[in-house]
Image (tube, rainbow, N blue to C red; front, side):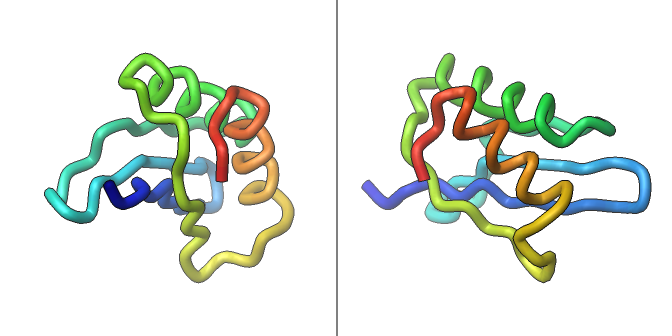
Length: 82
């Protein structure tokens, strides 16, 4: 099975994360909020309930620093592997 993708989007106020199954074109888990670390942990918590442990991190057009990095660290802290 191909790994699922954790896609990240950030606006001026919120940060969004969703785990996507590209083969089926479905979003399996999503979360949004102001605190990126908490959003990452929430995504990890929801993913582990659905038995999703290994993912690929997709930062999109955003650089890996600041809020995007905090979300990734929160997801790792929550138990996701990428």
